Length: 61
Image (cartoon, rainbow, N blue to C red; front, side, top):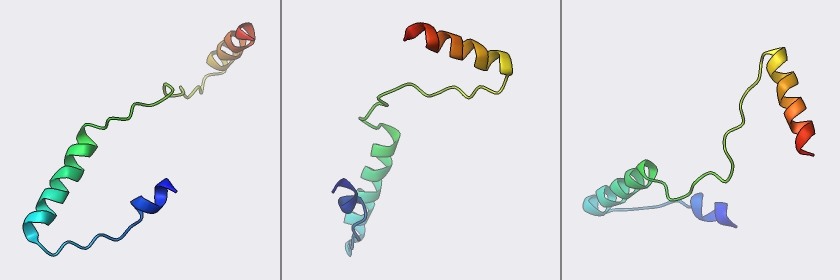
């Protein structure tokens, strides 16, 4: 499973290697290669906005 590799304990005894590892984690979080597969879903609180959304959804089907 993909999550098993994420949940692995990592032991680094060399301080330079630990610093390189931490830098790599920071760099990967700043520039992720994966893009979301779908845009974010808007949160609709207004009744008119919800009606409009449902009308548009019904027209697509």
